Amino acid sequence: MPSRGRALLILAGLGLLALGSFWTALAVGSLQLTAGEVAAVLLGGDVAGADVVLQLRLPRALAGFACGGLLALAGALMQVLLRNPLADPYILGVSSGAGVGALFAILFGWSAWGIDGLAFAGALGAMVLVFGLAHGDGSWTQTRLLLTGVIVAAGCGALITLMLAVAPEAKLRGMLFWLMGDLGQAGRWWPPLAVLVLALVLALPFARELNLLSRGLMQAQALGVAVGRLRYAIYLLASLATAWSVTTAGSVGFVGLVVPHLVRLAAGNDQRLLLPASALAGGSLLVLADTLARTLVAPQQLPVGVLTALIGVPVFLFLLSRQPR
Image (tube, rainbow, N blue to C red; front, side, top):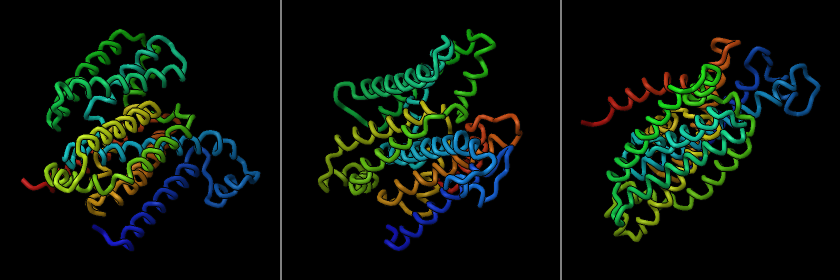
């Protein structure tokens, strides 16, 4: 476990990274602003382009940070739950369930509230389905949960393909952007940010038990951890965090897979540090990736999920090559 001083240093460094990602998101775009102009806008000064910063860039950056933090936190929890350092928050079909709900709402012309509501309902439905099938007669193992999640995700993927095949041309682009991850329509930033804070507040008190669980099921039970209840709580919290992120930004891949593993390599496996550090790093990564997505081929905007995949694939392959045989 890292010392207290080193842990504070890591969190301070990630906090500075988060501030830098926000400054970049607010300053960079079709209207370029200096650091002083950004500060003046945030302090209420009369600066040209203040409306662009306050009404477009800031809400989008806050929503991106919240979604990235939720995905990274969910990834860290899933990696403890499945005892696999390369587990992904989407691995249990939550994202696929949200995709089914959102694409159904887009296909029938529902409003933004309807799309968000049905996406969240689809994510919760997939979560309940996976949990119910994996629980079965009361036995519950990581392998059974994983296999059930893969099968449910495959079924949802088939439904998504069917809806894309029958969708009219006018709606197909929006459906594809949602599936690839897009923060362009994420105007309501405070709900995912509140969920991120709440998820951290709920997860951190269990950091000691999570540390013991990561060392092995038998050892955790021998040291007095209520493993069954703890695993249910982890599954529920990680699934809800993933569901809210997917509802806000669509399917953004690799953040929850790569970020916790990179933080673990730098900071160790102490969950008291790993969970908040992963949230900070994941949020910063998604804000920077979204800034790049909207400026790389401006005035066109790329889906942010494409950028995170282009970043995440080589990093994942590098991390995989470091794993012992």
